[in-house]
Length: 332
Image (cartoon, rainbow, N blue to C red; front, side):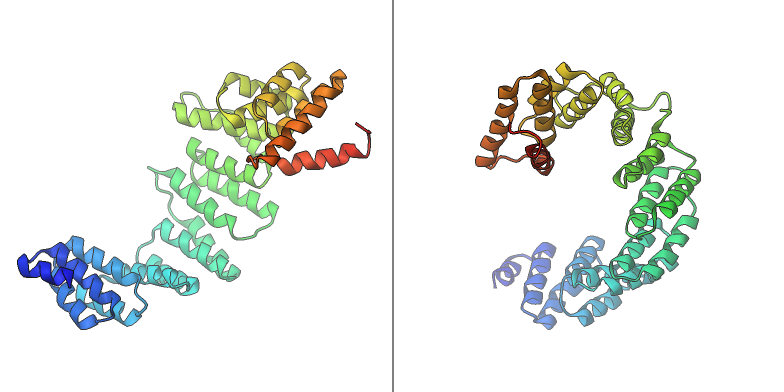
């Protein structure tokens, strides 16, 4: 009623759009049509109307408006995929995306279809489409996009380790081992604990990398060294790229320092991040090795106080497991 009153004062397209949505919510579709149909000639309102239709429960109304809007077939497929996703029908959405890909061979569309089919348990179908994705032309201007999409699809396909490693190498080869693609692949390897492969990929950092990529490269190489237990190299990586205000940096430095016999530095860094499970383990161990049992016990007390205050504690389960392990070995 409010929007109807406004229209009596001034015919305004935004008011008509809001009026149409109001009637749509009331399922008074004839009145909704009266408000919307005059707006379909405007590209902006046409897009907004179609977006609104996606979230309605009546697919017949959506079909009607796609016909009235003269949407090309590709746009119809993409619109229907959004409709089915919103209405918790991922299999239908995947089928629409597969049809859309046949019309416009864009890797983003195919990746979404692969992921949806995999999530619906259609693994064989998802894997067939993934092989199509691997055969697409790589955009020369954006190899990182192709690598990221391929790895995102690979993530859901439940291949074994050997097959995953093979696909990672294929992706690298197809992207010409561009630094951006190498970083994407290294991140994937670290997430799956292929530490040897991640270390191999990051062994030789290209010269003249822009600062953001260089920082990312150093961070991932440090993680690869820690996963592979190359602690000396991890320590030197960290010291070459200092970030003393970063909590994760200090945790990694504490680990690398302790594992390379740099107890003083390990203690400094571990105390700086408390309360923290890994930090508490390292601080306890250093104090215990020094024979400073009271200080070691104080680390436990500090963690208990943090728990009592319900402070967030990273890696808490690691610390509890550590305490359970030493409980059987020492009265302290």
